[in-house]
Length: 73
Image (tube, rainbow, N blue to C red; front, side, top):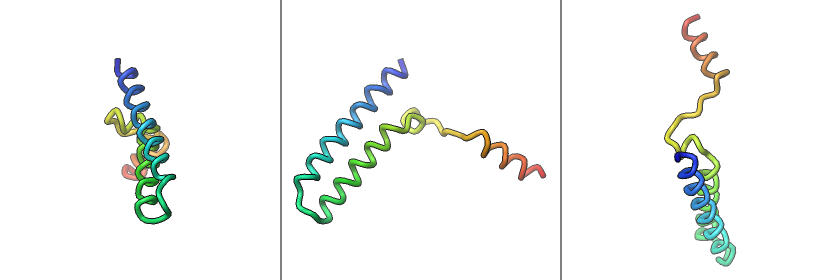
């Protein structure tokens, strides 16, 4: 069930990003267009990051082992 919910959320974010990007292309160059493009990029990145959407922190095991060995050593 969780994967299905994630899929729908991911698709919703991607569609919203595409819509905002289309609207931004119609705007004249300037601050408003840049802000819309940044917002669209943020939504796209959000859709790609499953760990963030699920509320989990993705940990790289190589980094975790380095920090524990550095602290203990």
